[in-house]
Image (cartoon, rainbow, N blue to C red; front, side, top):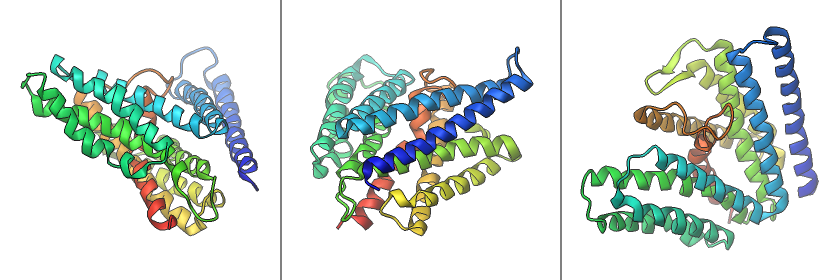
Length: 314
């Protein structure tokens, strides 16, 4: 199959699964709580509605071409950084550093990806950005909690822009025999990592008994983690045919990104607990903020990118 036929097959399958899940959710609502609120069923149906929108947007972006994908993830980074900063204590002296982050480093990072300048986009933020931001903040002449404030701005830029930008950066990889199919690597990464979140939720609801770390994430269980990672690793292995990987390689790569994705959500949960909030925002019904939805991708995307680049790009 060519790229278009493969995308139609993959997204057709995903939408079929969503349709079946939505039907199940509607039947459960009709049978168990037709006229009264039900926390679990209502949350499940809200999540499914949000999934329709999110998968639809990703599909439209991919069909729009590389510019559509880069533009979509630039917007996601902007929204995530806005949510991160909104929950971070900043002072007037940080405003210049924030302007650099939102309106210079973020668009420049995605522009470098658009022109395929790997040598600069891979170091722009962790080298030049991380030096520029504290310099800019220091020029504000406010030394109160300076180290803490500088670290928060740098950490937000790292998670929300640098890490997430590695998703569209997959389009720049030139893999022999796989030219022009970078969008399928994005589909593989997003579906594997996001399915892990779904499976962790389902396994946790079905048989979760042992809390993993209630102080950081009250809802995560050992059973949910093991069942979710195992199930989504199987999903990754089953999707080997859209990647340059063999089935065994696809399973190994999926396992790595799933484990990293779990710890991405875990670390971001620790930050939320520190800030005393449950979600980063309320943009996506049933999910919270944008950062709640892509926290797992932020940790898995850079590692996935470099695994592919190291072993599959000459």
